[in-house]
Amino acid sequence: MKDEDKIVVEGTFETGVDTAIAIADEIVSKIPLLNLAWGLSKVVLGAGLKLRQKRALEWVEMVRDNPDVFTEDVLRSEAFQDGFVYALEHFLRERSEAKRKAFKKIFLGFASSEDKDAFPLEKYTSTLAQLTAGDISVLRTLDGDRKDPNYQVEDPGGAFTQNLYSLISAGILHDRTNGRVYVTDKEAPFISVSDYGREFKAYLVS
Image (tube, rainbow, N blue to C red):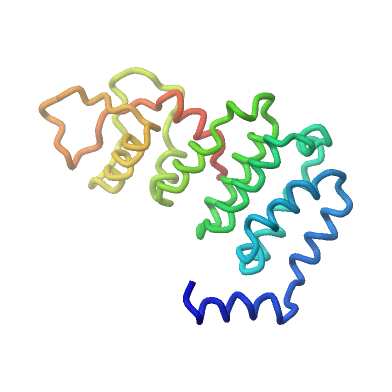
């Protein structure tokens, strides 16, 4: 870390501007066992929490607002605590508000899962990170139930053909063009939504 960066971080700790973190601490104090995951997050993420306090508070508020999901049994689980820290770190880093909303929904799915070790939290996180706002917008419009090989999205002027290819690269769509000679690289491919794509699409918020 450069000296000037250290000054910024140290200044953040010393100025006492900890309003959002103080509110988050107060919320945590009223939710039995959440202090386990929150305390671990403070140790692991440290300055990151200080520098993105509002996002950290938003994350804690999500837990508070979903008591049916975040039960004591869930909060007590080490798998949940590890997932909490992992997810919060990526949530703090995410620049896009729309992606942060989707990420919270993904984490709610993780917390609700009976088998947290099997839940693809890291895979969903990686997929969300590599998609653009345009990719997500196009994915929302696709018919996830359509499985025939002749599904070609109407794309006047090639407005979102590149988005479709990005979704194919991410494993969300299958390319069903199958060498059709009259389809060029600039035209929308024939596609179908993959099983993974349907699962992932369910976590996107409108």
